[in-house]
Image 1 (cartoon, helix red, strand yellow):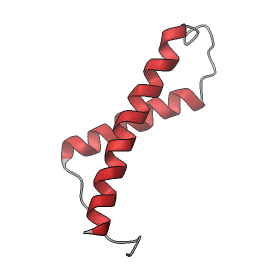
Image 2 (cartoon, helix red, strand yellow):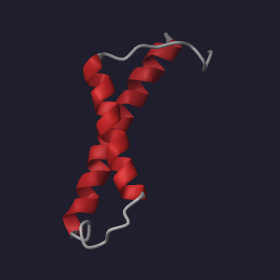
Image 3 (cartoon, helix red, strand yellow):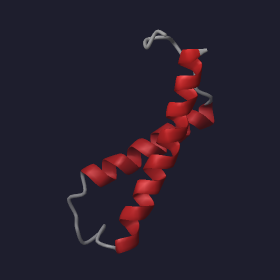
Length: 66
């Protein structure tokens, strides 16, 4: 198994990646506590990050192992 094999995402899969990374960036760099102080926003951002990230990791792994 080679880890540095090329693989291709469809446009909508790449959009999921971008949304996921945006949510991660907000989680890591939240500097305005008043804006993001809601209790539900952190859970929502984790879900928006984790679901596409896990899906894209599975797609990439499937293409690497192929």
